[in-house]
Image (cartoon, rainbow, N blue to C red; front, side, top):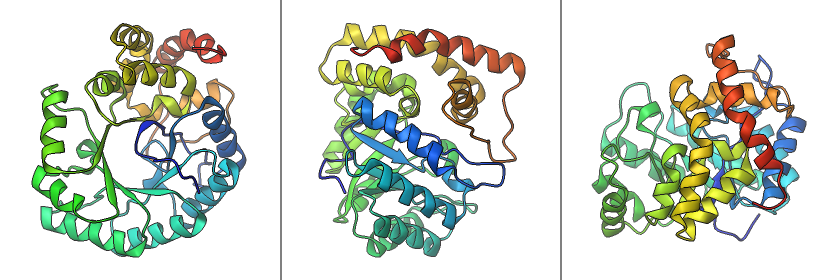
Length: 304
């Protein structure tokens, strides 16, 4: 267990290497996590969307958490995704993560039948009662098709162990306005996903960047995060410009498809996309490789 807050700074979300049957390669996972620890990220987001949590069995998710906790050994706090369709399953996953030594939980309102605001509230409340770890609300409407009202976020922030929210980028681009509105209603640490807007989010005063690209390119992402947190807009925009071609492939093909292809391209292990997800077509694969090529040398520099 780490004593550092998992809800501030750069949180790196690595892929979860697994075979076509969903069996997690814990050795390859540890190799990815070592790179994140060595780079000095603020936290690790294990079993997020990039970590294919929704496609893994409870047993494999627990194996991944146990392996990660053993590998990281308290060097960096580990935030574990525990989303599931059923509340009782999410409660079980939260207990598993807590017993395995996770530092915090990440919970999305996964559903088939769209949830009401009250159903989401009761779901989160039940999970917080199952495990007393600090919890981050995973607001991911593009995947879950559920939108948190600000009133719901306020109610959830009154639950003692709910400490943070992972937000999508605002549709109107008004980061400062959204941050002000959320801080007026809640006491949550506010972080953003959507890598291409993270620099602006941090420059605007967000507490955290929950990053896909940091799962594979942690030093580059960390350099951008540090520049933005320090208020260095010029350096933030310079590094963002270097990353923009890669982020464009995320938008075009879905970040999960790009990241899982790059795991093998960068010789970091073998990671199969869970079916029905399919690998990139050859031309799309080449576009992603061309986008990441200039970043590899940058990643390997000892000082950024």
